[in-house]
Amino acid sequence: MLHNLWINELRSRKVRTGEGLVAVEETPIVDAKPDAESNIFTTQVLNAVNTLPEAQRACVMLAYVEGYRYHETADILGVPIGTVMSRLSAARAKLAFLKEPGT
Image (cartoon, rainbow, N blue to C red; front, side, top):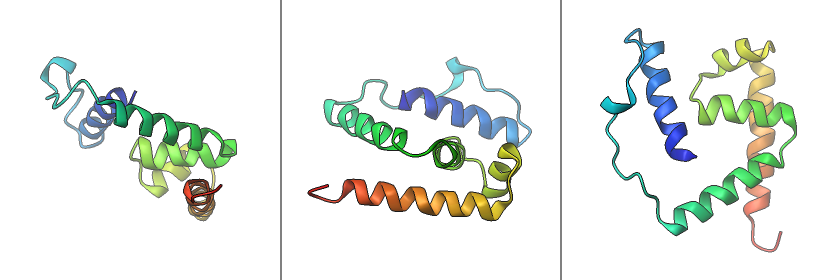
């Protein structure tokens, strides 16, 4: 899943910078087979993100996964940039709380 997200990020960067789409065949792939530890960590991160309320989850996915800037995320969601910043702050706080030992 992260591999596909990475490929999509490369494509979106090219489109946003005016270079057009990038063919998958032309995209360099460093390691297409993640180790078991990476798979476990990825699953844990996605599970934690999925526990967030929908508004926070959408902001996290757009800003941190898709790589949009805060103002782009605000435009996509149709909310003020301050709302995006507030939602991301709340999401980071919740995710930090989830990773603390004993929680």
